[in-house]
Length: 328
Ligand code: DP6
Image (cartoon, rainbow, N blue to C red; front, side, top):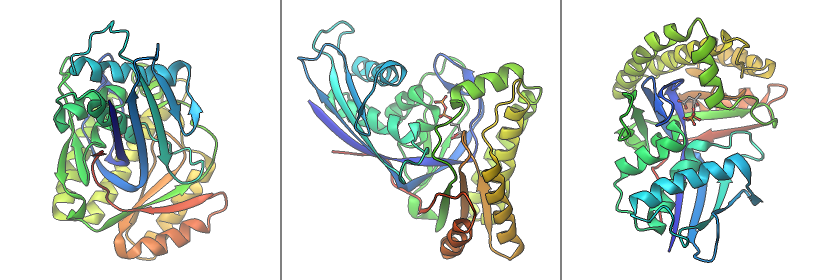
């Protein structure tokens, strides 16, 4: 009747941007990520036959409209997998989800959220799902969520249109490599453009869209090889190339899809400065202005100290490779 799950967010080292099948939410390009222990979502799904609709509370706030509909859409997939009739009047549940993220971060992650929701829902309805099947369901909520079912270093292949079974897979466990991701929060403002809309507009209007599609598989391949060799410079440099190619394709959309702000550039200058000083540190940004810096475990405190000096940096956190989803 009740399922609880904890899932960590993840950061793409080779970026997913764009879809091959919007209906099934299949990525157009392969991506590679590391799961992050510092950013955790905890979700409880409790079936309640007295409800007439799913009730969704995220970070203490009752959700209506689109966020609530997305949760219900994912729970409908879990209910279908558990054999619950579509019109069963007793099918609804109460969902309470808490993000344990740095204060008011704007990092609030759909990846950890949908991963935890899928696993907690599967437990609540006793759906006989493997981790692969949960990853495929979480993907329907957010493709990056497919990766958060797993700990450590994770790959999500590109999807062939129609392949609803597409799921992520773990490449190496969290203790494979002693790296850190130093997260610099640069604003409390909410995301300007949802990644889904940004991807759609990039594919629809950007003259660089096809160039991105052509380059992205090479980045994913090089990142995987670099992780296998524990080659930080190769992974870091390729992660930056993937990041800037993704953002460049989005900037060339009409109108531009731009997530990078002035404060982002200031942090990027500091990361370059660290490298000039001989510290192995490489930056990445997602569908927002925050900067995440990949470095060796031994350098994390120095990197964090330099980022803290930047004007406009609100908070700096150090994350290690984290574990996959845990259900209770
Ligand atoms: C830039 O997984 O949030 O963070 O599948 O449309 O929900 P949807 O998108 P989402 O996109 C994440 C994009 C990214 C890069 C990445 O995580 O790979």
